[in-house]
Length: 201
Image (cartoon, rainbow, N blue to C red; front, side):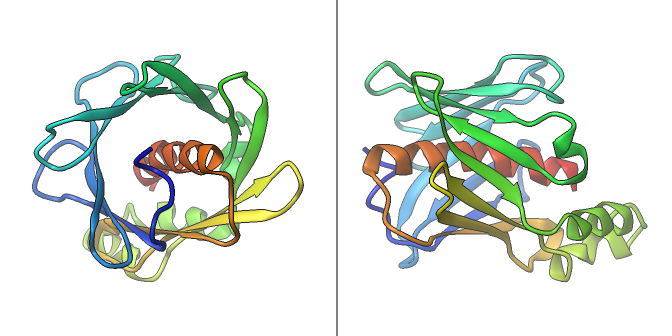
């Protein structure tokens, strides 16, 4: 499967030349991992993961279950093997202050939790980001991070927004070894989460 046995850290780099929320994933050596495309003008989020920027092969699809994403969950589908992979679920009220998501497997059993490390960073990022001119530079000094924990309490991954113009770059690092199937589940979930969190500021 394409989203495991990866060479971390991974860079998620958004394209600023398109209207859509498109981004590339590359590994620590600059090798291509995947290309993510969020379909525009959809009432519900619809995201396709391709093998490359030429979009020659569809690998996965992520779709929201609701129009409004306050309590939405996002189904993760393996298009190559035509199977449900699991889902990402935002934890409603808790996510207003501090972003929190649950990652569930194909049997709807919770496997991981993603939690924002410092809620104040996002608060100031959102507030300062509304100021004309200055807001464009918040990506250089207000950068939230997120930690993925298993049900065993261990920390498996950390996702960080990196200093960049318009907040266009994130980096994902694996902290400890993880099962291949679970690795793909987490990486897919974080792809969707990055789109949601970047839209929030």
